[in-house]
Amino acid sequence: MVSYQRISGCVESVSPDTPRKGFLVSAETWGGLVGALIGAPALPGARCRGRSHLFDEANPGETPEVVQARHKQAIGLCSRCPAAAPCLAYVESQPARRRPTGIVAGRLYRTPTARTAQP
Image (cartoon, rainbow, N blue to C red; front, top):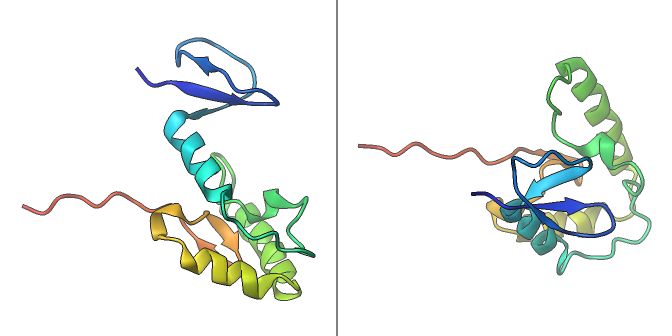
């Protein structure tokens, strides 16, 4: 059974078959989120603050045109951002599996895909 944790001011474990309101993530994802924040630079003046929705990867049901428009705005913000250099240095210092996805420091980072085993 997979355990989930709620992100909304408090964290609780719930059964995946229990209907709940709120944003639920798997324990593995929660660990990844916390791990990504530990050691992340402060990035004063970062233009992405308060605009995280522009930088995210495509959401389910979102058209490619909408994603492209969001990402274009995000890349434009990054191009004028005083924190771009330390942001890029930080993300590039992370192993690929720990890097955030979406637009980071003006570049698109996609969710790593599992490789299929070769016979």
